[in-house]
Length: 187
Ligand code: SF4
Ligand code: SF4
Image 1 (spheres, rainbow, N blue to C red):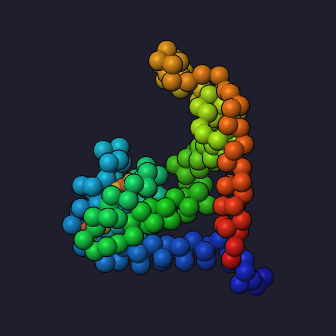
Image 2 (cartoon, protein in one colour):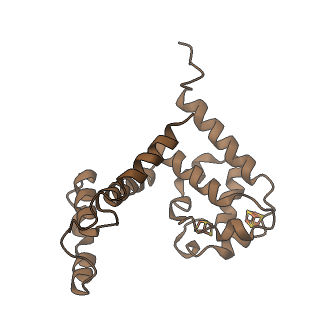
């Protein structure tokens, strides 16, 4: 069956996305400034510099076996300091989108967390941690997951960092979310 131009096959789209990422980092000279600038590097399993090397070499499976790009917090430090001026934060974001589409080992859980987080902000006007985590646990359908977070929950409760949901700012960002949805739907 022929694939329409408007709805390309997922495989075609994945190859195009990967090609775009390779082009973004093709001029990387492996200087390591991105790694040295990244505040999240200590938690990453692959240094950003190595991730870009894998991208240039087209080693897709090695890239998606790593969770380095999922730990990127979009701070732009690497982008601002890269001597080649490469759009590294954009490339990290593109990898996150690809991982979400592929439902990789790390992608599925992280994607669900992002979705629950954004839905929570849309609903409350800010992040409401208790409500967010309850919904995340329900969405993940993993009965053991809440147990893993219980010690952290008690610590946060003791310090007064979390509390029962409130409705003071409920829905205030709904218009903003609608606008972004509209912009994202544009061709
Ligand atoms: S800072 Fe830029 S040139 Fe240097 S390793 Fe990172 S991506 Fe490559
Ligand atoms: S944008 Fe992401 S990868 Fe770059 S320095 Fe910040 S957290 Fe690290």
